[in-house]
Image 1 (spheres, rainbow, N blue to C red):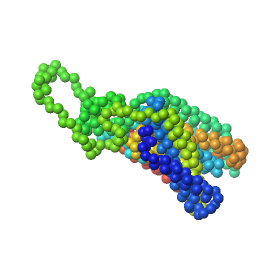
Image 2: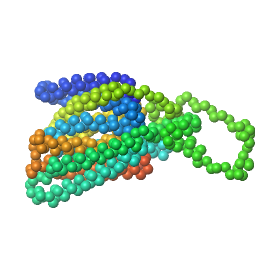
Image 3: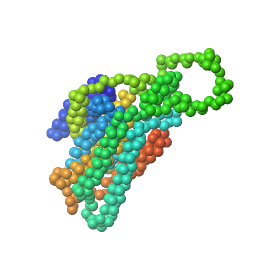
Image 4: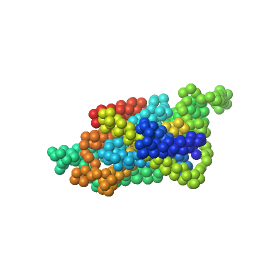
Length: 470
C-alpha cells in the first residue's frame, strides 16, 4: 500500500516501543529505579509507538482512499484526523491533573503546528519564481477554517477580557471562570464546523485529481527533459497548464500575410529535424519526486482489501492510545522537573504541546520522506486547522465532564476553566496566527518565500513572548 512503506520498520517500532513503554510505566508507577530511567523508557517507547501507529494509520487511510477513489490530499486529511488520537489521549491525562494547563497546552499546539506548517512550506517543490502551488481544498476550504478559527479566537479573547474586567468577580479575590455550559456551547459550535468541512471536502474534492506542487514539479521535469508530448500529457492529466502547453497556447494566430510567406510543407519538413531523445539522467535541478513517478501520468496501483484496511486502522488507533499515554507520562515528569528548577509554567506547557504534536510530526515526516507531498501537506495544514475544530472541542468537553463528575475539583461558583493571563493570552494570540495563515494561502493559492519567512517570524515571536512573558 502506498505511503505505508514497504519495510517492516514500523512493526519493529510498535513491538519494541510497546515493550519499552510498558516497562517505563511499571517503573514509574511503582517508583522503582532512578527517575531518569523510567522517563527515558517512556519517551523512547512512546515516540516509537506513535511512529509505528501513524505508519499503520497512513496505510489504512491510503487504502481506504484507493477503495473510495479519494485523492491523496483527502486521504491525507483523514490520516491527519486519525493522528490526533495520541494527542487527545495525552491531553486527557493532563486534563485530569490540571484542566487549566490542558487548555493552555491545546492552544499552544496551534502555534507549534503553525510553525511546523511554515517550516514544511519551505520544503515544498517550487517554480522558477520561488512559489509553491497548494492544493485546491487547502486554498478554498482550509482558508475558510482559518478565518472561522481566527474570528472565534478573537471573540473568545474579548469575551474573557470582558468577564475578567466587568463580570461578577471583578474587583474581588475570586477568579473568574467559564462554566461547563459555556464549554459545551463553544465545543459544539467548533465541532459542527469540522463536520461540515469534512463532508464538503469528501463531496467536492475526494474524486478530483488535484494539481499540486508534486504534479507541477513532475511537469517541469518533463519539460526540462525536452519531452513536450509528455508535458502535454501531464498537463491534461492534472488539469494544469505546463510551461510547454502555455507557450503553445499563447502563440498568436498566423495572419494572411504570414501564411502567404510561410514555407511549404515540404520545405518545412526538410528544414525541421526531429528532436534529440532525452537523456537517461534527469537535470541537476530536478525537483525531488516520489520514486514511483515518471513522465507517464497513468500508473496502476494495487487496491487493498477491506480486511487489510480495517486491520491497519485498528492497529494504528489501538497502539496510538499506548503511545499517547506513554508520551503523556514522560511529558508530565519533564514538566515537573522543570518546575522544580524554577522554569515558568508556560515554558512547560510549550514543551507539552510539542510532545502533543508528536503523532502529526511523525506522519508529516514519513509522508514527505516517501515523496507523498499531498499527504504531508494535508497533515501540516491539519496540524493547524484541526486544533480549533477537533482537539480543542474534545478537550473542552473533557474539562466540563470531569468538572461535573468530580474528577477535577470545581472552581468557586461552579467554574470549570479559569480566566487569567495565561488562558486569555493564548486565545488572543491565536487570531494573528490564523490571520497570517489565511492571508498567505488565500490570496493566490501559492506560498512564496516572503510569505514563508513572514509566517516563521510571526509564529516565532508569538511563541517567544508566550514563553518569556506569558
